[in-house]
Every structure is written in C-alpha cells, then in structure tokens.
Length: 588
Ligand SMILES: Nc1ncnc2c1ncn2[C@@H]1O[C@H](COP(=O)(O)OP(=O)(O)O)[C@@H](O)[C@H]1O
Ligand SMILES: [Mg+2]
View 1 (cartoon, rainbow, N blue to C red):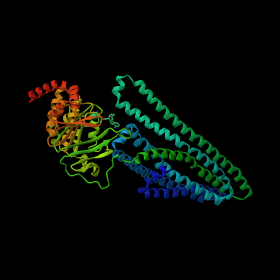
View 2: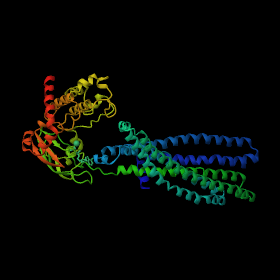
View 3: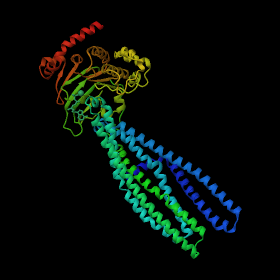
View 4: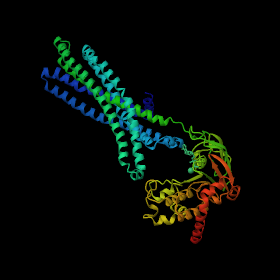
C-alpha cells in the first residue's frame, strides 16, 4: 500500500491534469444519466399523450447528449493517458538516474538482466494502473454514487434492495488482493528471464563452443513456463471473481424487475420510473465489472512498485559529501595512507597499504593474480571507498571532493576493453565529447591506432560492433588508449592494458605509452617486464599487502618476492624483450 502511495506522489506535478480528469468524469457520469431519464419522459409523457413533437424533442435531446458525452469522453481519455505517461516517463527517468549513480558494489551484487527488467518491465506494470486504473477507479465510485442517488430519488425501497449485492462485491474484491503475491513472483521470474536472455546473448560464443544451446533453451523454458503459470493463475482468479460478481449483480437486476413490477402494480411508481430505474441499476453495476481489472492493476502496481522502490531506496555506497568541493586541475600527487579494504562483508583484502606517487611518476604494481592490484587502483577514482585509511590527491581526501572533478582527471585503460556499439570515431570521442575530428585523429596517431583505423572499411566511421567485437583485441586496446589520450588526464591507470596482444602490437602500444605517460602520474599493472622496468617505483603486492617497494634494479638485487616473480614470469620475457627492442629499432 505504501508503494502505491509513493507511486501516486509522482503524480503531484500533474495534479491539475488529474483534477480536470476527475471533473470530466463527474460531468460525464451525470450526462450518462440523461438517456435513461429521457426514456422515462418518452414513456411517461410523450407516449400516453401521443405527442409526437415532444417525443422528437426528447430524441433530439438524447442525440445531443450522446455527442457531448463521446466528445468529453475522448478528452478525458486523452488527459488520463497524458498524465499517466508523464508519470511513467518521470518514474523511468528517476529510476535510470538512480541506477547510474549507484556505486560499483551495487553492480557487483546485481545481475544486468535484473536491473534491465526493473527499468523496463516493472515500470510498465505500474503504467496500467496509472494510465487506466486510477481514472476508472474514480469513475466507478462516481458512477455508483450518482446512480444510487438518482435511484434513491426514484424509489428508496428498490434502491435498498439493489444495494444488497454490495457486500458480496466487496468480498469478491477482497479476495483479489491475494493476487499481489502472485504478481511479486511473476515479476521476479520475468527478471530471471531477462537474466537468462542477457547471459545467453553475452556468452553466445561459449554456449556454441560447448554445444549448450539445448541446455540454455531448457533454462529459458523453465522461466518461460513459470511466467505462463503465474499469468494463468492471476487471470483465472480474476475471471472467477468476475463471474461471481456478474452473477450477483445479475441477480440484483432480476430482483429489481420482479419487485419493481409489484411496485408499479401497487401504484407506488410509474412504468417509466421502473424502466429508468432498471437502466440505472445496470449502469451502476457496469463499472463494477472494471473493479477486478483495476484491482489487479493496483496489485500489479504495488508488486512492481516495491521492486522499483527497492532500487530507489538503495543508499549509495560511494556518496558525495553535500559540501564536496570541485578539484582544481591536479599536479598529480597521489597518496594512499594506511588503506585497508574489503569487498562487502568478505575478509579484508588490502591491508595497511601506504605509498606516495609523485606528480608525473610511473608506479608499477606487480604481484600474483588476485593479490589486489586492480583493487588498489580502483580506489583512486573512488569506485570503492577504503574501510580504513585515506586516499589523497594533491592533499585532498578523495572523499571531500566531487566525484565528477576527481574522475575528470583520471583515465582508465583496462584489459577488458569495452567499446560502445558505435563508430570508431565516437568511441574515441567518448574521452571528451566536444573534441574535434582533428583532435580525435591526433589522439589516434599518438595511440598508434590511426594507421589501422584508416585501413578499416569505413575508416573512422567504421562500426565497432557491440563491445568492440568487430575489432581485434590489440585494435580495441589502441582505441581505448586514444580515448584516454583525448581525455588528457592528469592521472592515468593502465590495468593490464597491454596484455594478450601480439608482439608487433605490443611494440606499438609500448611506444604509445612511453609518450602518453609523460607528465602524468601513471599506475601500470602489467605482466610484461617492458612496462615495469622503467617505472619510478615498483610496488610488490602479496595477499593485499605491499611486501616490497623500489626500482627494478633495487628489487632484483634484494632477491625477495620481486626476484621470485621475475624468475617465474619475466625472465623468459627478456628474450622476447630483446626481440621487441630490435623490432622497435627497425621500425624506427
Ligand atoms: N568486485 C569484487 N567483489 C568481491 N571480490 C572481488 C571483487 N573483485 C575482486 N575480488 C577479489 O579480490 C581479490 C583481488 O582481486 P584483484 O584486485 O582483481 O587482483 P589482481 O588485480 O591483483 O589480480 C581476488 O581474490 C578477487 O577474487
Ligand atoms: Mg587485476
């Protein structure tokens, strides 16, 4: 019920539209009383007096009312849709904004399909109630109220009898409230379905390689069937209610005919009055039939509303302080001061990590897979906040500055390069939306991407495919580099940005990097010795602690962890490195 009230609060900006709608409903309902009254007049006055002109006048009146009613009805329907669609637009927008502002931990915990389903499916479920249900609900009560009033005027006794069906109708409607639980499950299953589809499409290569199409189809069938069952159950429930209600109201109408006939014979009312009364009884019960629909729309809106507000009520993990200041252009001094961090309620991952990166320095992070390298650099743009300690940029605690001004100065290139399904040009421009085409080409040249881009079918306008699937990994990485260069950040984070590319591409990327890192504080995480060797400072991480720090030469000489890593991972690369250097020399 609370969810419903909160949904209604979204209508507040459009209260005038709702008000006009309600006024129109009143007017319409009153007008709809007209035909039956004119019928009464024709039967009771024109027919006994054989007054043809009078009858024609009444018929003209009927026609006039019909025209007016239909016109106003169209207006009212338009208005109710207009308000409803605006509310849905606002709701969807609010939800989307909220999703975007959510922290990384939120995305770690939620599946893409689940989130998509809330913005699309759940909002749509609310739509029925807001655009149709609400106006109908008002309409129903207004219609019943006005019809009962005029019936009471015609014959209070018959009215009392007709109203006997009311408690039964209420009983039936109360039963329908149980639907909400079914809807809850159904919407959850619809979200599950979105998850299955999303995972299947995203992992299609794997699905095919492992011949898991039938298995995936089975997963889909399960939820698909479940949704069908829930839908059937809700529909059956509603139909049963409808049938019961229909019968009860039908009984009430039969009663009126019988009892009304007797009242006419008694001389208590005229035949015309009975005819009119009968019409009003039917008119009164007609909208009651909508009640089950409105009721089920309301249950749907409540179940979906709960799901929507669940997201809207999720507090931000990484939130900006109300008095956060905008960072000026940074020098680039980064300090991690006794930082400890754990993902959610997991055991601590980073423990007491402290280091200083001087402006323009290159800091390499090395360590086994899972030692916390990525986690460490993720703290700098505040993808997560440390549990203990602080992170300072040019002496500002990152928690005291606006997220925008912080992230504006950081560019990130990661191993799993993501490109948008757009042109190469637009993907590079993502680094700075107002960049000119010339600036884009310059950035691409610096990233050694220009040459291959111009050889693509449509050059800079070539489509990269979703996530960049139409390009090779090395190409994608160079586009990502160009994107970062265009941003012209003061802090550059390269998280395995050169992994898994062929030697030739690596030469190019390496040369690009050498230029790009000039004048920027750079964090590199790399499996390749080449990138690490010249770093101003190497931090060796082991189980989330910095176990060694120094330059390449110092660390090699120390004969500790770094030496071990070097022997295990990098020694073989020396040979390759020599080859790379030779190639580079040839390429000039
Ligand atoms: N989003 C996350 N939620 C929970 N645990 C995570 C998350 N990301 C990484 N981890 C865990 O944290 C550890 C360190 O990960 P990471 O920093 O990516 O290591 P590295 O980059 O050094 O290989 C790993 O054991 C990994 O399982
Ligand atoms: Mg990593």
